Image (tube, rainbow, N blue to C red; front, side, top):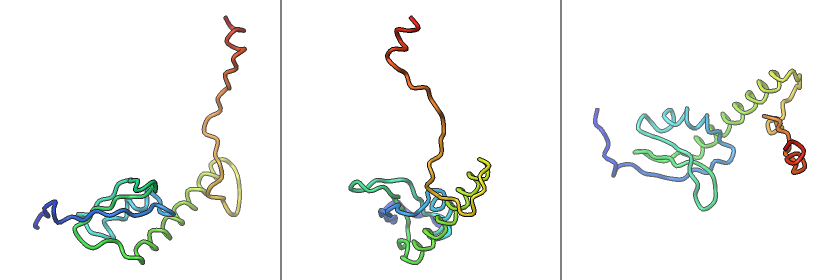
Length: 115
């Protein structure tokens, strides 16, 4: 097994639109081999991923596969979330806002009231 020198690696930006972070992180080696890596990256104001690989970049078909897997993953995650909240929607809306924490709004008058 030969190791690759750092000059053999190519870096390229992959826009993150409709590609789940969990999916690309867990599937990058399947598509590009064991030496490939990926990390979150911003390029000219666009959010996405920096892909580093010794081989060729992802093909259009591979990117479509990642998008399809991401859509399935996000749908399943939304279904799990609505089920855990006791909702029984046939179709779970992926981008439904979810309340994480309710905080009491600090009102200026409260400061003086409790002094």
